[in-house]
Each structure stands twice: as C-alpha cells, then as structure tokens.
Length: 176
Image (cartoon, rainbow, N blue to C red; front, side):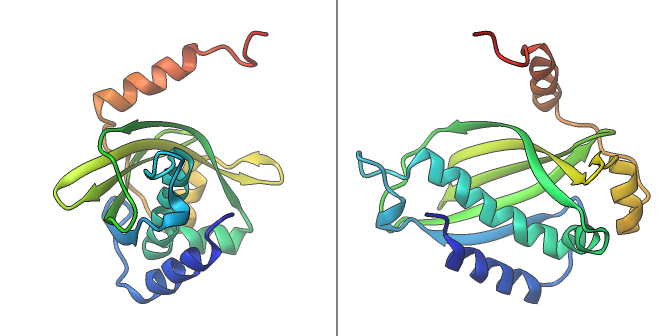
C-alpha cells in the first residue's frame, strides 16, 4: 500500500521549510518500518522507489515547481530511471534522502536521489521526468518560464549523459 500518511507528513514539512533554488538539494528524513521489508528482512527494492517519491514531492514544493504545475494544471510522470543498490537497510534504520535536480534538456528534467544511513550511501538513482498536459509533454522551456527561471541547464554529469544515450538505443516497444 502507498504510504499516504508519510507523504502527507512530507508535504506538511515541505510547505513549512524555506524556499530553495531549482538546483539546490532537499534532504528528508525517514525510518525503515517493518512493513517496508521484504522476505529477507531488508528494505524492499520497490519500497525504495516509493521512499524516493517522498523526497521529490517536497523538493517540488520548496523550488516552486509544484506551484507551476498547479497553476497550469500540468502533471508530472517519471519517464525513466536507473538505480544502484549498495548497502542493506533493515528495520528501524534511520535514513536521509538527498534529492536534487541536476539539469534538463528540451523534454525532460533529470533528478538525482541518494539514500543515506549515517555516512553510508545505501542506494542512488537518477530519474528523468516529463511534465504533461492534455496535449502531451510540455516543453521544459515552457515549465521554466512558468517558474520564472531563465537559465540554461548545467552540464549533465558524464554518467547521466551515457545513461541517456543508452536509453536512446533501447528498442521500444520491447521485442517479444
């Protein structure tokens, strides 16, 4: 089940925190509860993705991104992700999730998220998100204009550019 209560908490906190710039990092704090575990008593890989959701929503609140979406009645969709798992997370571990926008191109925003247990990074992901309307994908330039942002994207890290290139080679639809 989706953690609606946890999301409500993050929205409540995000609305009360100071505004940050589009490229700044938002840090949220979480606990791995027993219902987040898999059969091996570790944080379930799917739940990890859900916990990362809990970091992106308050980032959007704090940067003004969500306000722009709301004014224009736009939505947002994850259009791709790549994740790396490196450390175990067990019940009652305290976690910090660091979320930041690392850049954009004509169609997508790219965000990096990492989950930390103390000084150890347990997992990290990059996602690309598309802003959507009834007409389809909204150009990033239009979203930035709605937010009052008039800057170019920083250069994406080489590993993100390589991921984007690799995604471009993947056949769609997949072969049967």
